[in-house]
Length: 60
Image 1 (tube, rainbow, N blue to C red):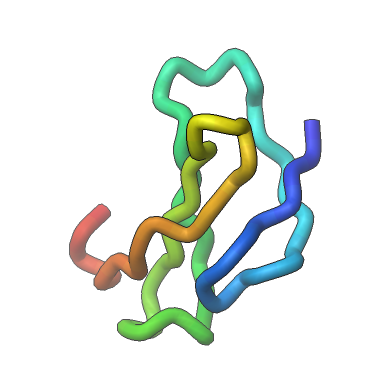
Image 2: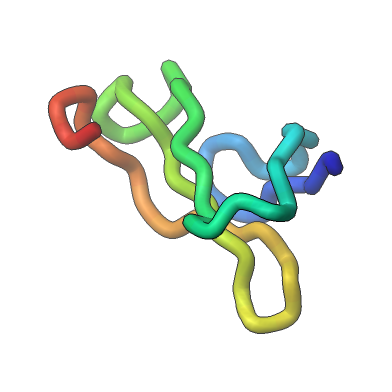
């Protein structure tokens, strides 16, 4: 399933997610993130995938 990301440096990008994943978030490598690491997105209460924060490379 593909979802559209909202907010943060990857706003508007569509990415594949596994809807059966028990840990519902993604951290995508992004050179546009604050730390040149990854941007983390998760579904909100309505199911919309929104930006949570940027991660430093060593945080994963």
